[in-house]
Structures are given as structure tokens and as C-alpha cells.
Length: 267
Image (cartoon, rainbow, N blue to C red; front, top):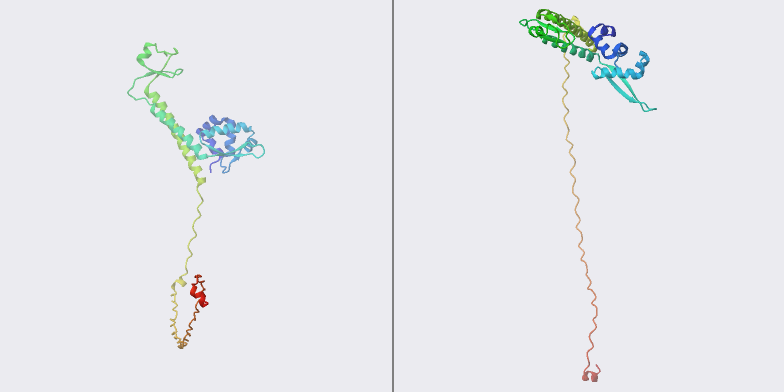
């Protein structure tokens, strides 16, 4: 497992953290390293002796490089947000390695071809000029008039190659730290238990096969039910319904005028 002393012993990481957080902020790295849970900024301020606002500002600088993450909760009494922080060690190593690789590419591109001639260089203005231009200016810088230094391609390339080697060694050291930090994340796999050995005596004995007797099914007796005679069906007597004639309503006959003869006869 990678601890704080191993981390700070690496020069590129220490330079990066010192440039980002200053020496005071290194205490926060010591408190956050190898912590899986988030730590409140008030706890960090109490243990490091740094003000809470300063703790938050320093950690925000690391947050810009995606090296730390935070979670916040609202306080019930005042309604303020309380921030808790966590350090991502692998992201820190990756960030420093990326910066070193960019510096390595820049150095390799600055190598001068061996076929080129000598040139004159001004440190104040960071200016390079050829021999003909330097001769016109009496080997002085055309901007600040300071005498220029003579550089040959061999001398410059030799210095650049030394810097390239140094950066390659730094990258190798960062990779070793990466492997050491990765060992902590690997799950511990327990070896499987060995299979039990079977004794030879048991292996020599033949295994007897148990043969179950075949049970014949019993014959099923058919139950014959006695025939049931059907009951005679009684014929229903037909009763004729006597329909009575409906009474005829007497209709009043119209009064006819009696003739004279009928009157005489007394009808």
C-alpha cells in the first residue's frame, strides 16, 4: 500500500503538489491519503490547523485537476452546505505522468540537427540567431544589446538528452508508484480447498448395486352393479275441461211502434 512518505519522496509529485497547494497544503494530502470515506472540511481544518475557508480553496485547486472529489450536505440549523472531500491517488499519479510526458515531447522536438551551424543565444530575451545576423549586431542581442552566448548543436543536444533521461527516470518512478497503489485495490483471493483424498481400501471395494424387487400390480376387480328395473310410468288421466258458455248480454230491442191492429188484439 502506498503511504504519504512514499508519495512525497517522489520529486515530480512533491513539486506538483507544492506548486498547487504550497507547503501548507501538503498536510491535507497526508490526512486524505488512503481514506476510503469522505472527510469533512471541518475535520480537516481541525487536524491540520488551517482555516476552513483556506482548506476549501486549496482543495478546489486539486478539484480543477480532477484529483479530489467532494460531497455536500445541507446543515439543518443554519442551512449552510458542509463539504466533505476524498483524494483519488491514481488520478494524481496519472496527472503528474501526463505533465511529464508532455515535457518529454517538448524536449525531443527541441533537438537541433547535427548539420546546422553554430548559433548565438540571449538568455534574457530567449532569442536565437544565426552567425550572419549576430555578426551584423556585433554579437550582441538586437533587443537588449547584451552579449550573446555561442552554442553549438552538439552542446545543446547533449544538455537536452540529459534532461530527457531525467524525465524518463521520473516517469518510471511514477509507474512503480502506480503499481504499488494498484496492489491495494486488488481483491484478496483465497485459495480453493484441496480435494479430500479417498482411501485406497474404500476404492478397492466393489460397489454393490441395490436391485429393488419388481412389484406386480394387483388385478383390479370389476364391480358389477345390479341392473335396476325402470319403474312403470303412470299414464296421466286426461281431464277434459268443460268450458261454460259465456253469458250473452241481453240487448235491448228497439221499441217499434205498434200498429193499430196490434193494439186491438192487445199485443
